[in-house]
Length: 156
Image (tube, rainbow, N blue to C red; front, side, top):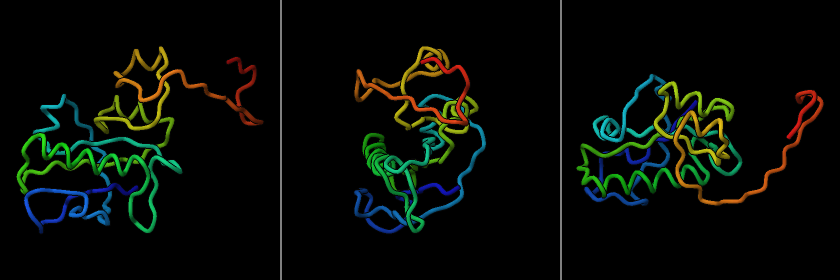
């Protein structure tokens, strides 16, 4: 599955803005495990974000990444470069790793990515496995829908 590699072009000035990013670059993701805190990420110069395919969060149109997650990723890459005074040769790469929604946290725990971006509901079980950022929206009501292939005796 493709991943975005924004800001990988070698032309332009040292200051990076949204207009200077090479937004059309798509390459196959590296799915090898790596662990560590932000110091390890800074050393690698790559922040790997695990994201589900979604009609709004992340999707690909004609080889170009689109959606709220893709836009946030491009802005995050620019912010990281400015915040950590990255030179042209040492820019951060923020890559998106598309993953099935039911595998997001599993892939995070296996070291496939560093962060999950997926509009996840914080449950007690999940909070015991991974750390969550402060929610953007609280007190959200969710509707669970099941069908013929759903579990028998489902109780919310």
